[in-house]
Image (cartoon, rainbow, N blue to C red; front, side, top):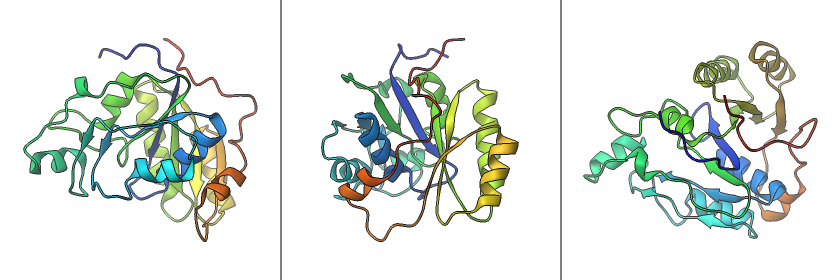
Length: 216
């Protein structure tokens, strides 16, 4: 599969939908002074993911989606209902002056069309990945399956962010069996505001992250 030219940034995916990826994107955009791109937006509303990141990280550059569909469905089905088709060739990362945070739709095996999955796009984009996971019951299995699928494609993983009440046992199991670092645990927030996002501690890297995926 042809890969994109070297793009500096990170791809944020999740173990499921409605798991907090957009909040994590705003958090990374703020701390890394990055721009943001949601390539495929379904369930288009005034409170879209792009609009949410723009509200929570007001200094960020927000690039418009390549595809926007009204129905809150899987990308391939939302596109089909509008008589459209998502083409991988149409998902070209925008030019940006600094790091780019890319937010996926749902998880890594979500279909984009009748032959391509999100993981195919991730492999083409050639970026390291942050996996967003729930902290509660079921997260160990879902997270380990996601990590395994990424590594089978030789897609590097920067780490995992866990959303929800802290669960030390689940965190330990994910780090141990997944051979991965949990970068942060974001507990339930009463109201998500720009000030609150700015107050969250930066990602827990032992050294500054290299946001360019290594070759090979």
